[in-house]
Amino acid sequence: MPLNSYRFRSVWRVDLPPVDVFDVLADLGSYPHWWPEVRQARQIAENAAELRCRSLLPYDLVFQTWHNAKEPASGLLRADLVGDLDGTASWRVLPDGPGSRLVYDQEVTVRKPLLRGLALVGRPFLKANHEVMMRNGRRGLRTYLAGYQAARRLATTPPGAADHP
Image 1 (spheres, rainbow, N blue to C red):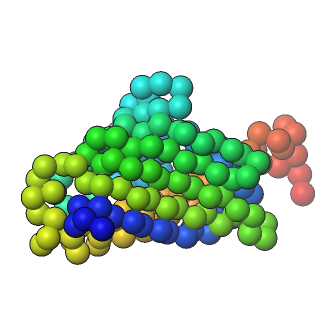
Image 2 (cartoon, rainbow, N blue to C red):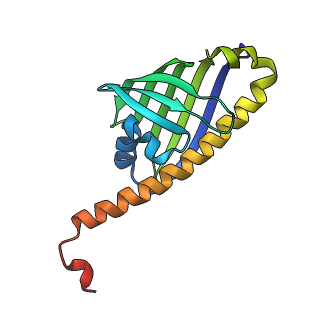
């Protein structure tokens, strides 16, 4: 594998059922609301957005992402990435008790010239940077989904029902 190519896998657990989690993950425009390192998401088509990401290291990665598989029944959400990163990223949203297990796989080649030039010495830093981004994404998604769940409960609670035990 070339030094500027990476494979990543992360597994997260969240407390909402797959159908709710899938909808949030499929909404590319919502990522900056829950993932701190996704600084900007600009919708460019119905199933596509341009994302600007930045973690600990002082550089932005800008790429366009297009859903090429969006299968709620099987829990598969996959996208092609083109720009500073070229490759694919996918989520598998699987039932796990009352919640969900999320498996994120990413296989990319870094195209940003600065990072390509630093591939040999920068590789461990890029991997660590990715780990921080994923840890913060997991934390942010859990918080976002807790709010999503609370709002849903409020929306289905009849008026005045919360006032009476």
